[in-house]
Image (tube, rainbow, N blue to C red; front, side):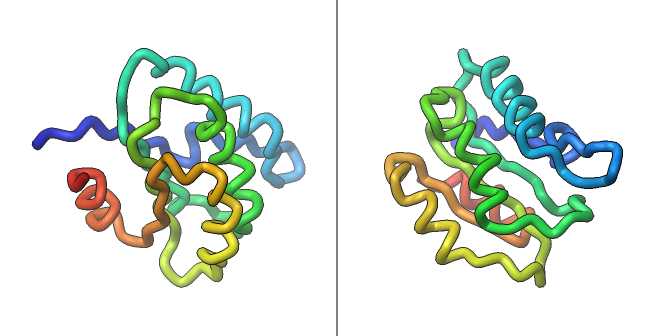
Length: 122
């Protein structure tokens, strides 16, 4: 079974301010724009955080991902988050934050092959 997967690298949506910090407000806008551009399609989405040099908390990642979960039809099937292995990421807290969006399968991964394999299974 073929799957339509859209992979978005952190460089495509993270907005870095002049002082080297992440501007989350602008980053949310960029992600929202990417989602709106693909509104007519039906993709599984993978957000790739692996090349992010910043340590981003579960709350900050949720803040970014939430813009895709709030009424966006483009990525209604699955949303996979690809994180760096070994990063201290609180999955339980993140899953609690995402609990109101139970209709959207959303998982975190540290391995590219695992997230791609997951998108191929119903």
